[in-house]
Image 1 (tube, helix red, strand yellow):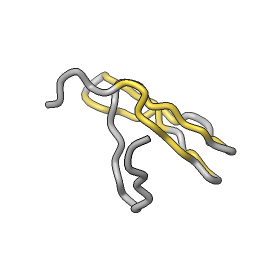
Image 2 (image 1 turned 90 degrees about the vertical axis):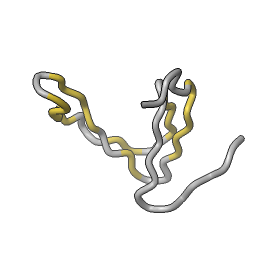
Image 3 (image 1 turned 120 degrees about the horizontal axis):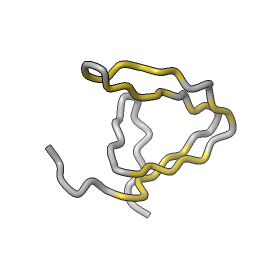
Image 4 (image 1 turned 180 degrees about the vertical axis):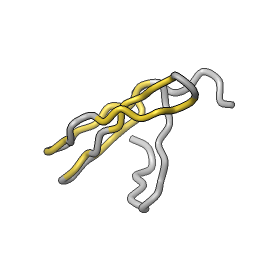
Length: 59
């Protein structure tokens, strides 16, 4: 297992991110660019995430 980051504001990026969590919020649709949309959820109570598949290309 890699480094564990617990700092507030740390960003995780990857093609596939796996999480373990006790509570999850309802998905909220957000606008990304133009007509492209995405969903946002909030993970609560002892949440842990890991990158299961890294980006092939980083912009």
